[in-house]
Image (cartoon, rainbow, N blue to C red; front, side, top):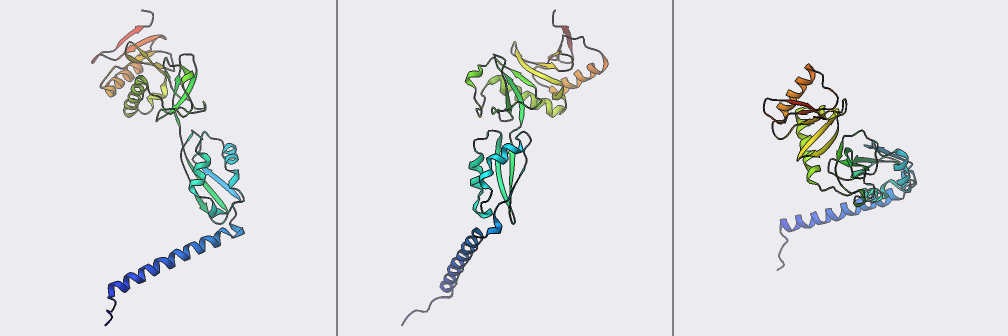
Amino acid sequence: MQKKRSGSTRYFFYIILGIIALYTIFFGIRILFLNLDFLTIEKIEFSGNTQLEINFLENLSADFLEKNLFAVSNIDVQKKFENVVRIKKIKSTKIFPNKLKIIIEERIGKFYLKTANGKIIPLDKDKIVLDKKTENLPIISLNLDSLNIFIGQKITSTFVDSVFAFENKLSNADADFINNISEFYPHENEIYLIDKNNGNKIIFGNGEIDKKLMRFKYIEENRTFQSGSIIDLRFKDEVIIKSEES
């Protein structure tokens, strides 16, 4: 006598048939969409770009025009823009029936790196060297040879790392204070800051950045610093103000 199929076996068989049917329907619909003329890409829209010009982006993506909307994948878009260092992440969405929207996460400059020969190089928050100098950013002065620096490189420098960490502490204490600083540079194992408004130099030292910043702002509000002053905040409960010439 033949054994009857159990209920679980029949159930599993129907699931497999269902999966095959759905798979066939999906690819059938996809093939249909790929052959519909009214789904041809007529417009490409960009969002998220601030430094990258629209004309540049449109020229790079021009190959997608007149292609079927469903023939262009995220991978296609990523490959087209993979050599643009200003682009950190990119993805696309399809807007029925004929628009492709490309969403960009741009690398934004955080500092300029000033090299030994005076070349100014923009860095983003990941210390990646960028290719344009259009933002208004504070400078990190460092004795590096610009000939050994290339676009897309990640800068490895103990001093650059220390400035990034120090700026993060400053911003946590007062997000707007960094806007008053034009430059960071090393001197006698300390980070010196230059006030963009009067050219004065500020030394915070290590630790209690929030308290030192409050002390500096209080003094700044209650007295006028002579141009060329050095404001030394390294000592507890004390501010030393001296002329750069002394």
